Each structure stands twice: as C-alpha cells, then as structure tokens.
Image 1 (cartoon, rainbow, N blue to C red):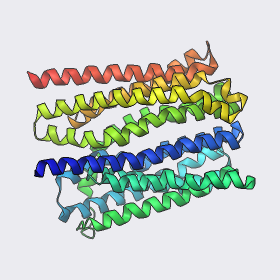
Image 2 (image 1 turned 180 degrees about the horizontal axis):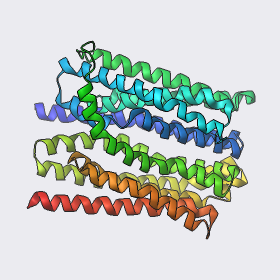
Image 3 (image 1 turned 90 degrees about the vertical axis):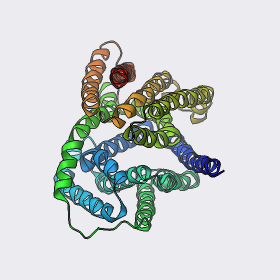
Amino acid sequence: MTIHKLTNNEYIVRLLNVGLRGVTLLCKFSLFFVLAFYLAPEEVGLYGLIVASIAYGIYPLGLEFYTYSTRELIKSDKSTCGRYLASQIGLYVVLYLIFLPIFLFLFYFNFLPWYVAVYFYVLLILEHANQEMMRLLIALSHQIAASVALFLRQGLWVLIVIPVMYLYPDYRSIDFILSLWVLGSIGAAAVSFVTFYNLGFKGWLSGFDWLWIKKGVLVSLPFFISTLSLSAIATFDRYLFDFFVGRDVLGAYVFYIGLAASLISFLDAAVFSFIYPKMIAAYAKEDLISFNSQVKKMFYQILTLSFIFFAASFLLIDLIVGWIDKPIYSEHIFIFYIVVIAMFLQALSYIPHYALYAQGCDNTIVMSHGLSVVIFMVSAFSLSYISELYAVPVALCITYFLVLVWKTSAYYKRRLFLAS
C-alpha cells in the first residue's frame, strides 16, 4: 500500500509540474502571438536578439558549475550543503566581475541598441540567478517550486502584457515588455530563495571551500566549453539570419523558432526533469537494468509528446498566421516546418546526452558540442550560396542530426562496454 501511495503522489506531483509548465508554455506561446500581432517585424527581431543574447550570456556567468555541484549536493547532507552553496555563490561573484564588462561590446559594436542596455544587464543577472536556483531545485527533487518560479519568470507577467497591450496602444513597446520581464524575474528569485531557506541547509558561514571550487571548475570547464559551443547555435542563428536576410524577416524567424522551441520546453518539464535524476541515481547504484529502462522510457515519451506537438502545431499554424494577418509571416511559413524538424532532432539527441552525462562520459559530450558549432557555421555559410532564406534553418537540421548520430553511437559503444 505504501508503494502504491508513493506512486500516486509521484503522479500528482508530475501532473502539477506539467500543469504549471504547460501554463507557462501557453504564456510563452501567447507572447509570441502578441508580439507578432502588435509589434513591427523589426521589433520582434530585436526582441529575439535580446532574448538569445541573455540566454547565451548566462553561461559564462555560471561556467556550467552546476554540472559538478548538483551531483555533489545530491550526495551531501544538510550540514555541508550550505558551505557548498556559499562557495558556489563566491565563484559567481568572481565570474560577474570578469564577464559583465565584456558584454558591453554588444552595444559598442551596435549588435544591440544602447537604450536596452540597462534592461539587458538587469535581466542577465536575474536570469542567471533564477536558472541556477531552478537547476538546484530540480536536482533536489523540488520540481513544483522550480515550476512555480519558472511560471513567475516566464508566464505570469505575460498574462499582464496581453490585456495591457490590447487596451493601451502606448504600451506596445519593447520597453514595457522588458520591464514586466524584470518584475517577473524578481518574483521568481524570491520564490526560489524562500524555498532554499526552508530546506534548512547549514554551514553557510563556514567559509568558502576553495579546493571544492577548484575541483568543480576543472570538472565543469569542459562542459562549459561544450555547452557554450552548442548554445552558440541558438544565438548565432539569429545573428546569422539577420546578416543573411535582414531584421524584418528575422522577426518571422524569431516567431517560428520560438514556437518550435516550445517543444523542448515542454519535454523538459514533462520528461527530462523527472527521468534524468533517476538515470543518475540508477547508474550510481550500478543498476544497469533500471538505467536502461529509464533511457527507453525517455525515448518513448519523447516520441509520444513530439507526435502530439506536431499534430497540434501543423493543424493550427495556418490559423495563427492568418490571425496575425501580416504578409511577412505568411510568406515565410515554410521556415516553421523546417525548424520544427530541427527541434525534434535536438530533442532526440538529449536521450543519449543524458545517458552519457549520467555515466560521466564528459569527453564525448564536449567533443560533440565543440564540433556542432563548427558544423553549423560551415553549413549555414555554405547553404547561403544556395538560399540565404533557408540557410540557417536547414543548417540547424544538419547540425542536430549529426549530434544525434554522434551521441547515439557513443552511447551504444558505452553500453556494449558495460555489458562485456
């Protein structure tokens, strides 16, 4: 009876988590629609550049240190967790002092306009803090708190934007959107902070464990390099598309890639955040049967949810574009179909990725990510001689497909090695 009760509780937690993430996802969907409807395509393109730059900027601020710290915190008790977290914060302060001034080059070289600089820096710091806290909450099995924080960070403020922009034309601007994003991020940080406070971790004032930080940096640095490479694709694609085609059509690309990337967000909430901690735990216990079972479960769930996403998006996309009623979107709708395929390939590549990560196969992950950005850049520039419009979307498909092949091959080689 106890096992049955725990199983029911697990499904309730999962349902609540998926529900919160689902509402957040709907809000993100709605924001793209509202931006496309009320803002000029050039402004939508600018918003896409800001979002992509912030998303990329949080990586050097965090150095992917969580790849080391989360595994350590899971194995530690409450008496030492506080010291580890305080040490991690100390590392982040040093990284802020190093990297924050470097981002000024985005504005100096006119990649982004100066009038959004304050918003950019405030959001960059808040997004990094929220991202790190959410990762820790998920690793410590506090998915609901993480999802509530994510809803405040990406969902609730959108529910305010929509009616205000509908009722008051003067608020249909990038400034208003970024201002509410700041407020939502502050609320998310507050929720995460309170959750950590209530966990009762001790040792916060025990001093920084610099040896622990040094060891963690050495472990996380390869992940940082590889993630920086792979994540570069999700930033450089916007800038490359802007370079190849122009800021107005970039608005259409940002709209379509935003819709397609929602698949990854939904899978992260419904699949990855639940299964990958179990994969880590199973491998740590040398329970290969359970480990392989979790890998298969991830595969089938991704296929099922992706099929649902494809069916819904393909049925609705024409209605959505018709509602927006701007030629720039209807004329370039084929971009959507290409980037959806790219996102599906990326989702599949996460299966061997998490399997390799759980087994500590860091070098394989680093190599695949490092090569991916080279493949993307070469593919994009090569394809631009054939079609500047479709060079970037098709290059995404090529890149994620090759990453999938690389990681899957490495996973099966590892599996054969363990079985021998």
